[in-house]
Every structure is written in C-alpha cells, then in structure tokens.
Amino acid sequence: MLRTHRRSSFLAILALLLVTGMAGAITLPDHSPSWCGTGKSGLAVNLAIHRDQMRRLEQKWGKAKALQSFPRASRAGDVAVLVDDGSLIVQPNVLDIADFGLQFVPQKKGGLVVSPSSDPVAEAIGNRIDLGDDDSRAVPFPKGFRFRFFNKTYSGMFVGSDGHLTFSAPDGTSAPRDLGRLIGGPPRIAPLLADLNPEAASGDGGVYVLTGRTRIVVTWLEVPEFGKPNHNTFQAVLYPNGRITFAFGQIDAREGVVGVAPGGGGDLKLIDYTQSLPTGVLKAAIAERFVGTRSFDHFGVARAFFREFADDYDHLVVFLDFPQNLGGGAFAFEITVKNDILGIGDDVFDFSNQVGSKGRLRGFVQMGSLSRYPGDPGTEFLGTNSTLDVLGQETGHRWLAKLHFLDGNGEKSDALLGRDLVHWSFCHNTLASDMEGNLIRDDGGNRFTTIGATERYSPLDQYVMGLIPAADVPPFFYVDGCSNPTAAPAIGVPIRGSRVDLTIDDIVAAEGPRNPTAAKAPHSFNMAFILVAQADEFPSDASIAKVDRIRGAWESYFGGAVDGHGAVSTALKSRP
View 1 (cartoon, rainbow, N blue to C red):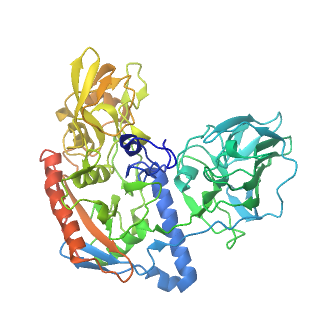
View 2: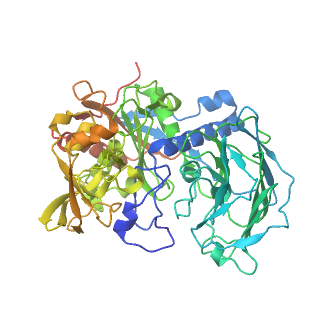
View 3: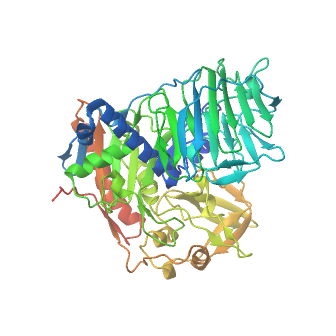
C-alpha cells in the first residue's frame, strides 16, 4: 500500500484503503491509504471510540448528563440537521507514556488484567536484527519456550519495524498504524504501533531481540519515525505464562497505538493507561490511541438522530459542514451495523442497538466534508466517480462485494475481488459497477480493454442486494493473469490475460443460496440524509440546499442503477 510520504499516481492512491479491517472507503489523491469503515474491524473501532467518548463525557459531566449530551436534531425539509454541542468531536490524545511501564497479566478463566509496571527498559537487549522500513522478520522461540496469547500457544513470532509483534503471519506493510490495523489481521502485541523506520536509526539504534528459556525481549532502540530526526526507545518482554510487559524510555513520537489484540477483528476496549489502571479482567483487544488531531464520534450522530426521528431506516447518510479528517486518508466510508442475510459472503451479526436502533438500521455512511463535493451531484470529480457514484459504492457495501466462487479444482476463490477483498477486482467485467471492476471489452487473443466504469449496479450486484433472482443473473467473466486487480476503475486501459467465464451457480456453490431470496427480500430502502455542523454554527441555507440536491438526485439515480428493480425513499419520519 502507498503512504503519504511516497509519490504515486492518482489511480493508485484511489485504489488503496484501510482499517482496517476497514474496507469500503474511497480515498483522495495525496492521502495515505484509507482506513476502511466496513467489516468487523471498522465496526469494532467505531464502537470503541463511541464508548470511550461516552466515558470521557461521563467523567466531565456525570453519567446522567452524558447520556443526554448528544445534540438535538432538527429538520430542514427532508434533511436532518445536527449542530454539535461538543459531544461529537473527540479531542486529541497526545502520547504521554515516556518513562512509563505496563503489564498485561493473563487470568485463569481467560482475559487480561492491565496494570502499571515498574520494570525499566532492560539493558540486556540481545542482537540487532536486520529490519528495513515497513518490514517484518520471523523470530523462532528457543527450544522449550512457548508463549500463550489469547488462549493460543506460539513457538515463534514476527517482529515488525513499526513497533509491533505478530503471530501466525507477518505484517510488514505500510498500512495505517491505527486501531483497525491493531485488531485486524494476525494476533498482535504493539508496544508502540507507529510509522517507525529502523533502517534510518543512527549509531547503535535499531531493533534488537534477546531470546531465552525464561523470557523473550524485543527492543526498539532510538528508532526514528519515518522522515523525522527523532528517537523512540521502548521494549516488549514476553514470559512463558503469557505475561507481557511494556517499558518506555525516550518517546518523541506523538501519535501511535499501544495495546494487544487477538486478531481477526472482534471487540475492542479503549483505556487511558495513565488514568485507568489497574483494570478488571478484559477479554477483548485492549488499546490506547494517541492522536494529535481531533477525530469524530460517528455513532454519536446515529444516537442523536434516533432521539428525534423514527427508527425506520436502512442507512444513515452523513455529511459534515466543516473540514474533518476521517482517519487514514478516507474520503468516505460505510460501516455495516447489521447483517441478517445468508449467501452474500458475510457473517450474520447485529450491533444496531449499540448505535441507538432497535434492530432496523443496517448501515452508517460517512460522506465526510460537504465542501469536497461538486454542486452538481452528477459531476465526475474523483476518478470516474461522481457524488452519486460515491453514494452508490458506500451504501452498496451493506451487501457488497465479498463473493467467492468455486474454481475448477473445487476450491473457494477470491479472484472476483479487488482491494481489501470488499470491492470487485479491476479485472472483473462488472458492467461498470459502482462497486468497482469495469465494463470490459474482449478484443480477442487474450487482449481486453476497459470501456466503462462506475455507472450502475450489475445483475450480480442486484442478486446480492436481493432485487433479482439467481436465474436472472447472466454469465459473467474475469481476466485471469491481469496485473492490476486492486486498481481503481478506469476507462481505456488495456488488459492482458485469460478469460474465465462464470455463472451464478459457481457463486452459490461457494457461498450458498441467498436467503432471503429476491421474492422475499425488500426492494425498497429508507435512507436518511443528515448534515452535521460545528458547535454554534448552524448550516447555511446553501449547505442545506446542496445536501437536499444530492438527496433528491440519489433517489432517481438508485432506481436507474438497479434497472428499476428497487427504490430508495429519503423522506424524514419523526418519532411516533
């Protein structure tokens, strides 16, 4: 993945995303790869941030007032308006753990207790290992040493240059060093997950490992952040009984994530290490996030909305009337909060009650700052995407795109999938789906050309959305051997490779039939449009009118994009 400090083409940057665990975001040029809102990791991160914001408000105002702290929504036609009262903005949390220590102690019945540690950075640090920027090295444990972590035992680890250890798989990418990365992917121990570059360390600086039968010591000694002349010294020590200690020396970094996670997404508990220790028994991922800029409590918006308006929406679509970094360079993202559909490549889950809905809400779409969108919702401005195309992708992530198929060997294949495995592959002939891929012309002789992009939902999309039956999905193809499956849609790009034809039966063989079927699934969806303003700054009439134009155009666009097989209503409904 590309990084903010490395130049790249617009299309390459647009093609890359987060969270982690956080797929489903669209990125801007000259930004880092996007933190992604969809998927379990994105959901867990946003729920954790929301709960942590509630904790901070309780400390500030008391529990009773905090529960009522979110701003009251008002109506401007069919646009809901929220003026922040200070509860939606999450204030910076500057790194404050220099010369500090932590320990994570496993409990007999599972889980960890976190408490302060008085262990200093040990002087015996072993041998320096060869680690470059965005790198990872396998380190086997010595004979007789086994380390138990979240109920699994490991005989080795991977040491990452970015201040973390992983188990089962390496992680030496340049993906954002954020909460999504901490909890997604392999099991992880992160004394300081930050953008560090050991190959730029001077003198004796670098990453060291000391292995023994009683403990494993990993030390980042005077390692600078990428492109910065600073120094960061910290250490992680692993004991056979599963105890972990972190020791911090000089820390010049001001942002990063400190914590542990079992991997694969799941729940996340945010704590303040200098204020909230010792903890009780925690059985989820544990972390503190240090950031130098403000962030946003997205789910606080949902709770505020449902206090005033009916709990009768499939999606909440949110625009911000002020500049706000969404995290990881994301331009827009979607968070699925409930899925009750089988056969679409996703698990069944329901977290809607944690965002103020009683089982009705399915997805939360954060479109980001309104000022970045053109006045005409149909104007292309982000690669091949218009505002309506962006909406098409983000709302579409409730269902799409996660499908596998059975290949000729009877194995599950993800060859239809592109970036983050939640968008269609560039090499997939999606008939110009908003979920990416392209309309691809077969020129013969294993040569192909993209001739259309981001215009509609394909028949395969519509099947997954529950709008048409499997029998109405025509055969489709992808190009095997295509060199750029994770690229963003683009028109006029030549492709070389072998054509592989598939049918819906290949999908059903891998994922099972969609349930409910198109005959029983809803074909009409309610989506509420929300505009959020900063404290004491009610949105201008022009801003409200702009959101209203997008809202009105979206209803027509959606109907055309699904070939008339479905509809969207954006009318606001007050609470009964």
